[in-house]
Every structure is written in C-alpha cells, then in structure tokens.
Length: 103
Image (cartoon, rainbow, N blue to C red):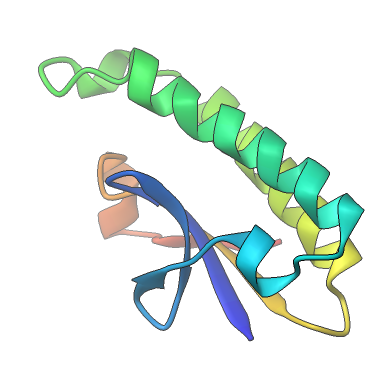
C-alpha cells in the first residue's frame, strides 16, 4: 500500500488517487487511530486558516512541519504494511516545484 498524505478537498489521505480512511484500512490498530485523529485536526488547520485570497499569509512552514511529523509517525507504525509519502497540497505554491517532501 502506498498512501499519500496531502490536503485536497475534504480528504488528506489518498491511495491510487482515491481518498481513503485509515480506520477502514487498519480497523484494529489503535496507534493508527490516534494518528488519524491528529491528522484530521491537522487538516482542519488548513481548512480554518487558509484563505484563497491571501495564500502567501498561510504559515506553510508550520503546517508542513506538523504534517511531516505525523507522516513519519504513521510510517513508523505501518513500516511493514504501507509506504507513506508526504505531498504538498496544490494550494501551496511550492507544490509546482517540489510536490513531494521526503520523509
């Protein structure tokens, strides 16, 4: 399984271009459930604070720092079950030049 963590619409987790939920992929894993809750809160930050009219004012550095931290935690938990990739959302202007951030 290759999972992409990125913000796009109402979903932050994708597999083969389709939104997925960790709870459905790993229903009995409590560590995954805790990380999914934090990922959901992280996604909410973008939804609450990003403004299309002023994209440069959004604190992308802080946003990516937290997203990468969560992605690394998820990769550690799923080390033998999935590959996690962290991708910049298209709202971030840097996504045109470096869409994926190495974990």
